[in-house]
Amino acid sequence: MALSEHYLEDDIHPIDIVETLAAHHDWEFDRISDEQIAMEVEGQWRTYSVTLAWSAFDETLRLICTFEMEPPADKLPVLYGLLNEVNDQIWAGAFTYWAEHQMMVYRYGLVLAGGQDATPEQIDTMIGAAVTSAERYYPAVQMVVWGDKSPKDAMQVAIAEAYGRA
Image 1 (cartoon, rainbow, N blue to C red):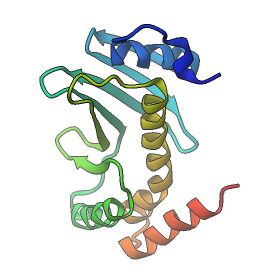
Image 2: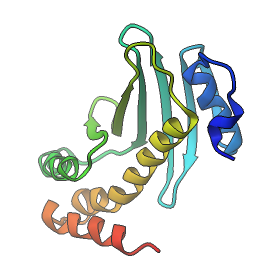
Image 3: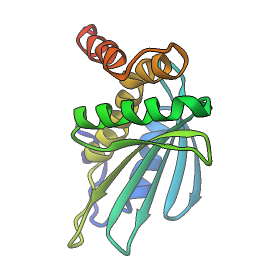
């Protein structure tokens, strides 16, 4: 049975859908407001903080997936170089580093203009893509920041990791 079969009525709020998905996956979550939910999603490398927020103003469901990281200041240029390489490889979403908060961030926005409704499958795919991307590139980030590897060498590990899964 498809996830959307649980939703038979129209106009289900996207954050209500996220809350149901979080409960279904047994993720710890906190419904911060009617428009925002935060949860923890366990990955292979670490636990990621995932927050989704609905903006009625621009009809966008915004997702951020974060993890803490404190790179030395002298590593920031090479980290930013790696993030440019990473963002060239992914089609949906983008990575950035929020230096003020010392957080690596994956961001994505699902635009639902014209009163469109998000489906549970869309939202589940959004969350899955965020965590999958974070997992895929986490080793590359670590290699650049702590292992003195070049972005090019670190990207080879990220690409090999993608092909190495069955």
